[in-house]
Image 1 (tube, one colour):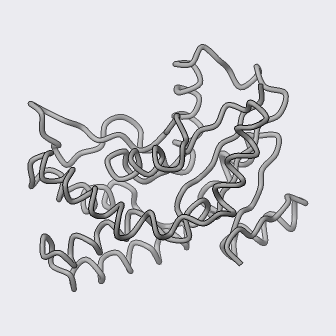
Image 2: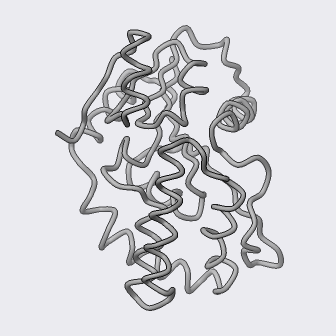
Length: 221
């Protein structure tokens, strides 16, 4: 058994699920649509540049979870899946996942996007294991705060190692380890695996991959 790790947004999906969730909440009138668009645009520019403050972003992105009961949130998310996520799933991405599953590889989605948004997406993609930014709960409701280390940049190495340990495994147990990602923010984890694959890469990652001879994969062209 080998290990295959996949980023989610702009890697397996041709969109950013965090951004689209905020847009969806704005569209159905839960959040101020103009404010959401403005703030998401700012955070995305900072993300691409590698300057985003993850604590500030999570405070913004998780606030709606604290403001509404879980049952209401789950209902909105089911509609979000039907209207936004499922129509965006592409055969090239599902075929990539299936190739690794067919070989018997241990597969996981490793994403900075929080677990509330991404857990249903991972299930829809047929991926059992998800390593995502965890969300704190108290008395059955979300607090609007992350739990533990955010699964972002170097945090992805830490959190993936913790997940492997929970499976009774270590990095050294695998002869080959893949990580597919679109973002230069994932260079730390890509540098940890034996087979990094720049997938639909942003400009910074494309340049980094070219300099190091990493393969480049375009799933959505």
